[in-house]
Amino acid sequence: MLSTTTTPTDRRKAFRAGLRSDRLQVFPGAFTPLSIRLIQEKGFGGAYISGAVMAAELGLPDIGLTTLTEVAQRAHQISRMSDLPTLVDADTGFGEPMNVARTVHELEDAGVAGLHLEDQVNPKRCGHLDGKAVVDADTAIKRIRAAVDARRDPELVIMARTDIRGVDGLDAAIDRAKALVDAGADAIFPEAMATLDEFAAMRAAVDVPILANMTEFGKSALFTHAQLANVGVNMVIHPVSLLRVAFGAIERALDTLAADGTLDAEVDSMQTRGRLYELLDYEAYNAFDAGIFTYTGR
Ligand SMILES: C[C@](O)(C(=O)O)[C@H](CC(=O)O)C(=O)O
Ligand SMILES: [Mg+2]
Image (tube, rainbow, N blue to C red; front, top):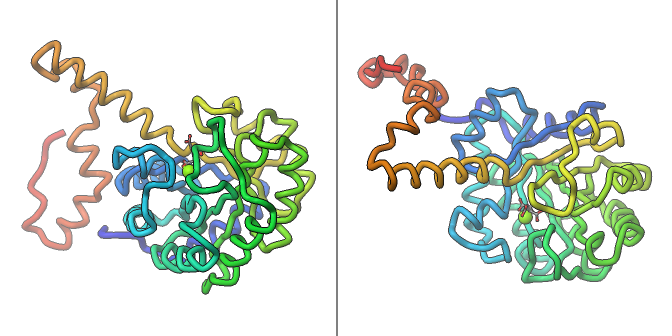
């Protein structure tokens, strides 16, 4: 009821424990605070908060137009609605190293368990598009050092994402990842890896957990959890998937409504009012104040 039953530090510890375990950590993208309730109920180990989704929800492309304030607020709204650890996309950190430090404080205050910072130049692109550019190693290292030094809760996970694979190839990605680990990154997000062998090579090269991004319509094939676990990947995100699923359904429903003049044909595929109320834990609010809960339908 109302919000999480845990503290941010508890969730950060749980995230670290999951990353250290030999089980693949599966984080679907929670595109709303309500969706993280469902992700928790379905037994996933955590949830991802995507920058691409944040931008898309605002009707914007994912090219660094969202602000730190918007991202921190959304990260807070989502992180506070479950007991799951959340990993938030902090893009390029919203500026120079001092801005990165401020970003870490804001996101820490928002209650996330971890955040990732990438080495793209601004304005950034979706990691699975062509035409990306990355900053030099020195600049990328400074971003991670600034983040690590700024962290007040030592349990907060600072993950370094490198986009260099799509620009200069796998060897460059491995060199960059090693440098980012030396700079203090707790984990590595190698973006747009092409094959399982590339994940295996990254796994062998660094001694911190690595993440696989299974975003649809991107550069990586959609490997299964078993395939990723087999090559030693520690964590997988499905960042935009739930938004894509929801908007696929929304578009079909709008077509039906326009054609039929009624949504009758869609009702069977809708979440029922009863199921929604279950997710909201309506009944707990009733126990708190018996005057509130009056709904008895399906
Ligand atoms: C992971 C990602 O950074 C995101 O913002 O969710 C995106 C996902 C996408 O655009 O498909 C990315 O891979 O750059
Ligand atoms: Mg992103």
